Image (cartoon, rainbow, N blue to C red; front, side, top):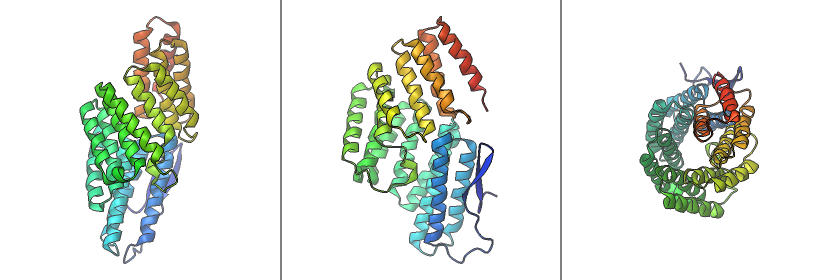
Amino acid sequence: MRRRNFLTATTGTAIAVVARVQDSRPTSVGTSDVIRLRSGLDALMALDASRGGHEGLERAALAGADEALDKVKLAASQRIRQRLFSVAANYTATAAWAAIDGRGLDRAQARLDRALYLAGMAKDPVVEMRVWNSYAMLARQRDQYTEAVDAGYAAQATTIARRDRFYGSLAHARTALAHANVGDRQAAIRSLGYAQEAMEKAPQDEPRPSWVSFYGVAELTAITAIVRDRIGDAPESEAASHQALAAIPKHFRRNRALATTQLALAQVHQREVEQACATAASVFELMSGNPIPGRLRSLLGDFYRDLITLAPDAAVAQEWGDRYRSEWSRA
């Protein structure tokens, strides 16, 4: 049974993300229990930042949600009940995110549906915004571009996005990506402008949950690079990718790998084939020691497809293809 104690494994070592609950269960659950459960979320997000989403992380997050829900009936007050629902919603959203990053898209859909329900029970607009942000990403992975736009607008409409410019910036950035995928250049640029304006006005020192620690000026610049490339502005995309990589913290290895792959895409779209192959090859070194998450594999696949389309006879492209197939087999 997943409740009461759950583990996630990385590089052969089991890391406990929530301490074991004593066999003699308390007669009521209070603030200290909520704090303990939330600390497990922080541990999982630190693992995600380094390694990326994977099934071990997904299972651990679901076990955390089970434990939080198991305690709801023992809550000392209605306020504690809502906080436990919020914790459960966050764990479930974390499981959904792990599935998205690992390309388990059907599982991700079910997790997000459940997380949105729990966020409603918690009356927690931050989790609600988190879920809509992930819905937009899932729709993009499924090539459901108009649904991604709708999810971006839903994220913008949440209370927290309207009240806190930081979350508003993320919602507009996600919508910009969706517009770019639809092919609406003007809407994409307009949404990027809103995201940048909101970021400039957002307070930077307010405490926020660990799941959103990835977002900031560096990540917005990385998103700008993606948007610019998808609307045909490869030189601007390359410049933004360099700026993002100069600013994304080193411990966000998966995010740095994604930004590096985007840089390689911008370079190959400018016919800088040798440089693009060298840039893309560096992704494998960045993720050395860990399996490559499904979302990153998919982006590398996009790079390889464009590489052989634009330079099918280049020797460096053939060499990179051999390396790509070898790395693809990493467990």
